[in-house]
Length: 341
Image (tube, rainbow, N blue to C red; front, side, top):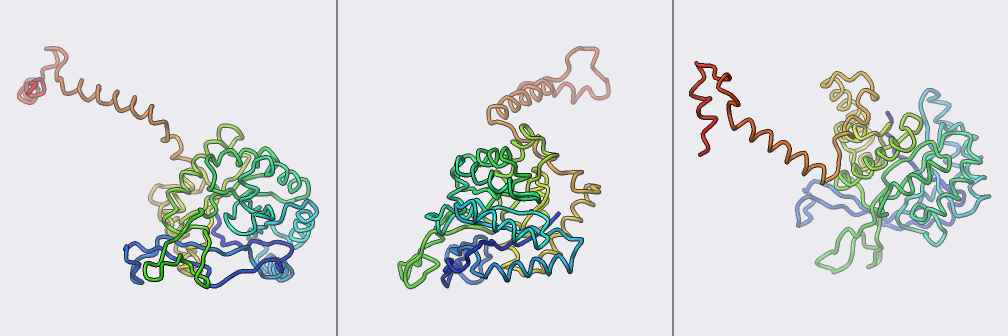
């Protein structure tokens, strides 16, 4: 089980130019009061503009200080085979345990065929996954975009192209809102804005649905014991994490939750998840991973199930089926059970 905010690493940070402000929040009360609970968070942030050399140094330091912990580097690069190969080689040299490939950032530099520009194009995704998996010597996760009609299509391509797992979801393309005083969009940069990625609690139900669909795909077509699934989206409690695991996730990631509540939230999440497991007498994640998947079906099947249940309840209300079923002492209730009005 992992909780991990991640940095997006690319070869050339010089090309990345971020702006400020780059975040906007959605609160539960309609007037946007600063006292309202934050349920939505939008960013128009690009990948990190921190130099690659600094990140590589930090990766190496982390593995030296915590050799028994899992470190996964989240990386993104342009549509350039040589660039991907160089980035993978340099990151792997730090000792990371796995790579998460960002095929899902919904905004920024689509002209460079990065992020969701790849994840939304299955042919392009297959090609780039081929480059990556031919080079990588550690497990590879493909991070999926929710900004697509059927998320199982790119997930299937990624797994078929050699990835050991998928992570879902990244942020959802959104417009956070309009300032009704200035008539300008948020977040406002010199009077202007651009659509960005939406996260936090409000996206949790959407993320659960996407993860459920991927988990069912993996179970039916790939064997979910051979591949891994990392659930992401609106995790702020141990219960949120448990929901992803119940839908088939092997691990759970947190980023916005840590940004809002600080690193201390990780201990809270772990503690609450352990409490959930104790409540149900689960001794490991595998004891309940995917346990809720079997309860999802089609609407047509729901109708059939309900009609059958209604028939059974009506049959029970009809009362005794034969005179031999009379009990004697309970004859008043038994008589009542056979009255029609």
